[in-house]
Amino acid sequence: MIEQRDQKVSSLPRGVRDRQPLLWLNPDYAPTVGCDFGPDPALAETRYARCAALLAQVFPELAASGGQLSSPLTRLARFPTALDRRGKPPNWFLKRDDSLPVAGSVKARGGFHEVLSFVEAIAGDAGLLRDGTDRSVLAGPEARTLLDRYTLSVGSTGNLGLAIGQIGAGLGLRCVVHMSADAKEWKKQRLRDRGIEVVEHTGDYAAAVAAGRAAAAADPHAHFVDDEQSLALFLGYATAARELQSQLLSAGRVVDARHPLFVYLPCGVGGAPGGILHGLKRLYGAHVHGFFAEPVAAPCMLVQLAAGCDQPVSVHAVGLDNRTEADGLAVAQASMLVSRLMASELAGVFTVADDSLFRDAWLLEDTEHIYVEPSAAAGLRGPMWLLGSPEGLAWLQRHHLEHAVERATHVIWSTGGSLVPEAVRAQFRARGRRD
Ligand SMILES: *Cc1c(COP(=O)(O)O)cnc(C)c1O
View 1 (cartoon, rainbow, N blue to C red):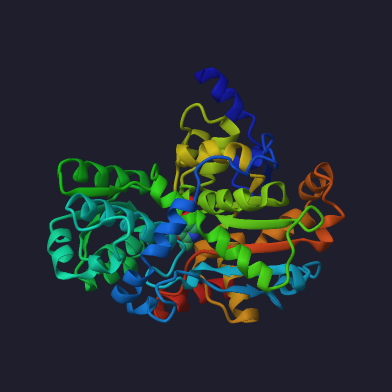
View 2 (view 1 turned 180 degrees about the horizontal axis):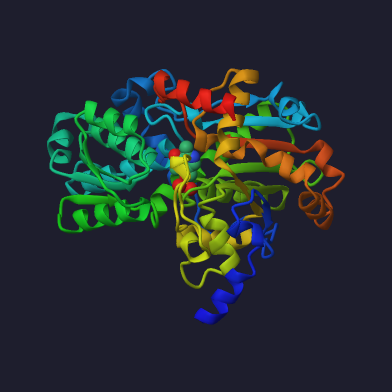
């Protein structure tokens, strides 16, 4: 088994080990796998709907939308041609999860859902909830007294901790956030300013997760938010699919056999992009094709899928060091839960060097006045890989999409940025301009 796995990893494109930006196409991609396959996001959609009034009441940022969590879909008018003159502006969209309320990143989708499902479970056990009970009671004094006894624990490179900490604290839970060495200082500070406990670790993401898991295991009143294995997080992310579907409809973008949809999603452990793609596959089946973006130093999903999903394989096994400025993507080992689903649902992965993250983020801000954090800029070159590289063009031909591509819609997922303080933005900008 081990031998076979090493053989497979050694068949990785050479460029992966050499940290070359490249497009890897998944040989096991099965475009038609999707509808009625795998976990169903319907449960998360109904949970979000029944908890909307509660969220509107507890989080001032969600009052205006009536407790509905959503982000705009923005047409990119100037960026595509600024990036490459072959870019066709009318077809490129940016899904603005960088502006999701409370968390300022895509983590809001998984995080709110996981925390709500936990809170509903404890309140249900305590007899405070029945099927039809208005979830607003969870903001009331009786529930607050109950929730005050519970702790949420999470390990993170930054944004998941930021999301769980702020959401959990808002709902009255104690929160302990274990941060990896990659976590940016301002993210830790923001949590501490809100009275949320931050434990700093010198190790990477996996070490922070392990510490959080161990701490929670010792405490019967603690719940560990497991970014590597949580179905609740995954399904929370997957609810983004219906939101995008209605936005594409409003924008007049058809998705069918003649009008495919391509999505480009930055990938860390895999939960966010995997959940979103899975949700889209359930809605659109073979008409949607998903590509993940990963740092050249941390292409954990690429390495895992190339090795097969029998056993975990980390980027260290192929000589990479997981060092990147894209803190949200600095993960050496992909989630096995997600890898196994992506083995057939994911079309491919492209890798991105740190320098181009800064450059592209700057170009996006310069042309569209949209600020995103470096991790969130990872998807921006996706359409160019597909439309402008020999591998991408060959893939389109193989899937008989070379003509449909003219009519296609490209959605680049922007995953974080709105909470980044101005002083930090200025540093990122300077680097983007200089590079
Ligand atoms: C977490 C994160 C991602 C990737 O999500 P995973 O679930 O770790 O794959 C992408 N971008 C940003 C900004 C993130 O914080």
